[in-house]
Image (cartoon, rainbow, N blue to C red; front, side, top):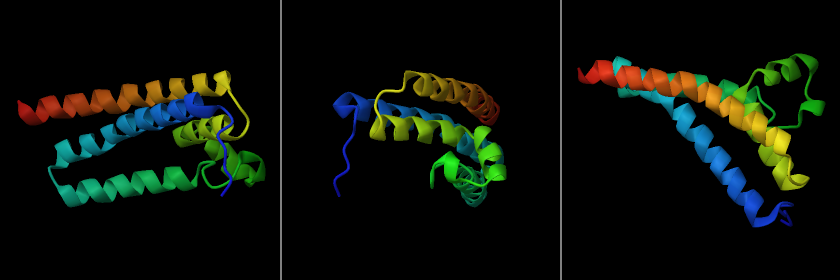
Length: 127
């Protein structure tokens, strides 16, 4: 379809690492639910109820400039927006170190809560 990654192979690797890091951090939520409820259906249901709104209330579907004002405001507090914006920047425009720093900071912040919660849930479930 003619898509080109402006940052080349290095940018593609950065985008993959960023997506993988966010995936690991976000999986902490499912782990918390699974270890707390011990119910696979509940884990799946809560995972979907958390993931879909975050995806659709982010800039994943269109850039922030094209979103209604209220949705743009919501997107500023959405961790998915930062990951998507960084990947979009690396793909279409070139290296954006500030965007990458923001995305990594958000991933670290979300990870602090989700991975800590998952670790505590694991300790509680196995003790």
